[in-house]
Length: 633
Image (cartoon, rainbow, N blue to C red; front, side, top):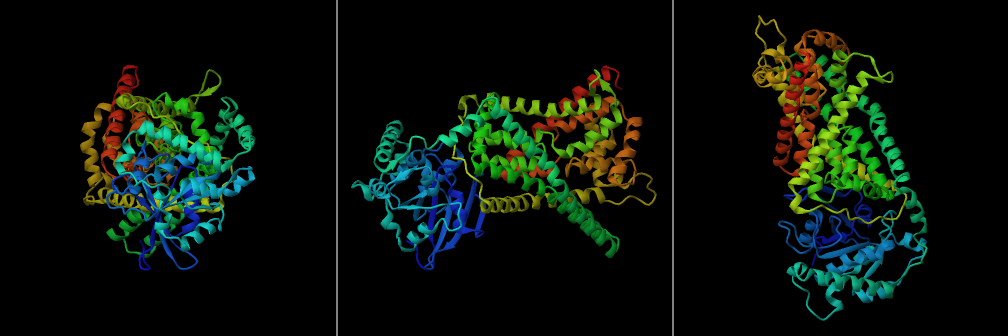
């Protein structure tokens, strides 16, 4: 029981897509914090609010679950929290069971399972306005009587939509809302969740049908509008075309809309660095701040516009009810390599940048599918590879027409993109074989009613994602960038040095040592050196090559001057080997850091880094040797 000094601890429990998180946003506004549950990658959202009478309430938004018989990591966390089995997590004093009033039949099973635990509960009929519009009549008194629970209504997409729930919380006590009050028998122990499951599931379905028959009246044609839309959206041909157009627009927006704000960020970063250079004496501190801290912060912030645009589309499509249908439409295609339809959006977004793509895997409830998607996301050809591809293709691939229709350089670029896609699907297929004993993961999801997205929820969602990206990725990227600056700057070249400064630095020495390893795939010491600072971001390899070859110019001029120089000094076999290397190699600290944060440890980032480097080396070795055999030396 909470006291005046201790807020009432409540938890929101409900199915995915029931509007639970929207209700959480209405209750807490910006007074919420987002983290991960200890030891797992499931998101934990907690907030505080105060009722009209001054009662303080601490609310936990539990991960969406269809059942307390956990089939996913999200459901396991929810089960463990409500049953008191989650280490370090106090049991809630009150369960607020949020249901979608327009799909009550699908939501009641979870309510009944929670009621079996005998916990204090209140039932929330969310989206009650939509239920009325659709002609659904719910007898709240009968529903409350049959469930033995208080019943209130909410509209989670309205600013005042939680008024009735807040009024109830003002006066209610957890004991008055105890779910076991309906019966005379004591609540079953926690182990009851695992006992006699088939029989209990059948009993639950029968109980849901009985309660629905007594308390709910649904018009026969209430789903007519959604059915008409779904006839197009889920059609094998028209639905696929509509999805292709939607994804094309999203893909273009991530590139085109982000270009201007990314330019602002790059310009601001450059301006700050120039200001420091103009107002500070030359020395290690100025170099650290300008080339390390400022450059590192800019390298992180420049991804933010792409991330916000991507998540704007994802959140809008999810709130509208379209995203679950897109996943359903693509489930059969993705299932051929052991993934579900939910993996498609994260993989598509990885073509812009793997970091937001990896973050977008949070929409995948099954941990195994999510992990495989995370591990193959870096194989999608991100925009950071394009400067390297453009440089090498311009230098080594003739600008000529093939078959009178296709540009040879464009075909090579397309082949590089296709190589990444095919490789990703092959890795997913291998992962599917490795876990064959676990069986395929079915795509089980509720198709929610279509609705207009809430501007408030979109804004809160974007604010939340921006904070997650900056807090969880920014810190480690900044530290690694500073480390790479140190390796590239020290020790300083001797007074009689004739080569570029980087040749004498720790990075240069590492590059010289790496040449022994990379010589079998055609890489010289200059390439090996460029790969070291290129770990900060793939596109840095172009400027690093310019530094190694002592070219002092802007980024565009560097590429223009480098192309003829590389064409004269490298063989075609070396260029093709390097192109193939960049298809696979995890030359991006941002991606490695994102995987580390999303998997809560270093195990999977190391696995991903190891297998990608192994693929890169093997593919480059084969490419180099075949090219030599065909006269490309």
